[in-house]
Amino acid sequence: MSSADEVPAAGGGSSNNINYRGQLVLFPLPFQGHINPMLQLANILHAKAGFKNITIIHTDLNSPNQSNYPQFTFKSISDGLSDESCSLINLDTSNSVINFLNKSCIDPFKACLCKLLAQVVEDDEPPVACLISDALWHFTQSVADSLNLPRIVLRTSSMSCIPAYATFVLGQQSYLKTSSLKQELSLMTEKDRQSIIYKGDSEEGNKELIASMIQETKAASGIILNTFKELEEAACLALTQDFRIPIFPIGPFHKYFPASSSSLLEQDRGSISWLDLQPISSVVYVSFGSIAQVSEAEFSDMAWGLASSNQRFLWVVRPGSVCGSEWLESLPKGFMEEVGERGCIVKWAPQQQVLAHKATGAFWTHSGWNSTLESICEGVPMICSPCSYDQPINARYVTDVWRIGVMLDNWRMNRREIGRAIKRVFDMDNDEGIEMRQRSKSLQHKVNLSLQRGGTAYRSLENLVDHICNLSF
Image (cartoon, rainbow, N blue to C red; front, side, top):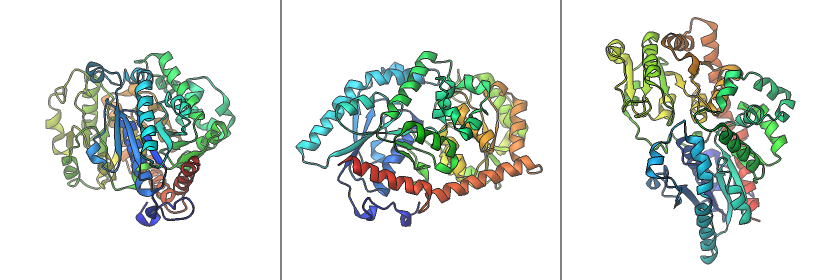
């Protein structure tokens, strides 16, 4: 969205020329995949929609770098986690941690919010129009209700995840009444369904978290989604009918601004310099996000799979992501000698820039929603290795609904299958590879249209601005 496509202010003015009287309070969940979209949303509401008074309440865990956001006010609250507990957070424990935080943060969050509301009255400042909190902060609905403050939910996963969770985790059948959505959900395999509930956490705890998230989202004043209508039309229709609250698919968030990041990890810019030297669409970019871990055996198979594909690769190996290793100690002997200069390994990369780079031809991903959406936005086909939670759902949509990728799940993480999957995506001598890239480019075009003036995401942002302003009265 260019400066010429600014969202008109409520009442018809230009959002650049108005300072909305209502203040906003945002509360991100303290994980990379949730912090990024919440801060991107804050930037959208500030720069594109004219909300100048925005406060970010955050936990001590993974607190954002405030110096990167001088336009916002930050308030920190205690989360009750010890330093030792923070150091042990991984895919096995993440949902247990979220359940813990939904209890330990109730009093600190309410105290912080009450103090902020009192300060607004004391200083005769514009009132707080609403609270925008992550959907997984389900306790915030009761706090907002007790303070007579409207709450809008930010859901950082796809729209399609909610029907899938309700159907396969909670055993509800209501979403199967929508024929197009029923057809999409029928593509989920038994392994997909089993993977949604990650066995590292308590299964009952996971179900409780999902049920509370859905229930308290329905009680909110609206829901913001980091997606666009054309990508998930069946889910959009189903949620509109079921939730009976305003739904605002205004994404992809990161496309509103030049590439930027609120990454908690330091990015290696050398990866871009390396890509500059590679041929067009020749590189497979490999990154499994900020929390996933692999065993030493899986890591070795990944290495030899990349080697056997004979494809150039940029591989993000996050320190600590290989069980039992600090970084690259588990690389098999002879690997670096075999791949030579056609491989580049970094600790972390500026992902948006990597995916937008002309040399990037495919993305081998864990299928987190941010990564999936960023790949769609650049027209880059995917190789999907989902683990749990929303990842199997995202991956199934990539491979079987949108048909812009191939599946390489954890049951087939061996060097032969890895090499074969990479070759399938890059093979331009058969219809599958060609059509996959054509569909990827088609979705990229739809993204751009949705963000232009009059597009669905553009209009959703207009509607969101009006909705927030009306909550103040």
